[in-house]
Image (cartoon, rainbow over all chains, first blue to last red; front, side):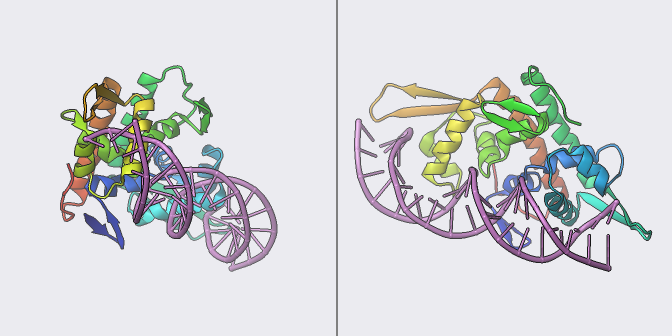
Length: 113
Length: 113
DNA sequence: CAGCATCCAGTGGGATACTG
DNA sequence: CAGTATCCCACTGGATGCTG
């Protein structure tokens, strides 16, 4: 049993998987892999995600310290999201999962990232 | 958009993550990493999982061809579950995620696997 | 532009009891 | 031993509308 932040997990792997379990989480991390992105940019890249969920996910990722949020004091508002080092490491593993799927399901066109 | 088996995914990564998104999936795969395991054995190793969910997950994993089920014609029944090659490859990536969590959260005792 | 507030539906998983 | 069958709740994410 692992307890963290008021939640409990059956083991450390369960805990780690919880970071990326959400439907959009892994995809968003990959979208941030190369360069920082703005909110609207992320929303456009991530076809199908609702604004509400994008917000929730970005907050989660920020709390988990996988993503860093930078707010510019401008009008109209400008906010940039980027991966932390910890997040970048995790994302590179996620990319291995993507490679795994490309290898084993070549017939499914890769329309992502 | 990726369509497979009546479900649709926003991209190939979403599709791949769906294999391991469930609460117990990654843990079960790791438990099968070294050697085949019997049903009850898995249930005992995987503290907290209900019989119903263990069944559902094993069926999923079998459908996804990550796990192979071998039934011995004996009484009482004997069934063994093992990783397929595809499953073993994926599981080794999952183990990287576990290593990532060990590295970044050393304070959380690793009671798993 | 980058959010927040609501309301709502689908589903993943828990608890419990039964069987070839 | 290795399952099936129900019932049920909590939570994730969808849709829509409002705001500094």
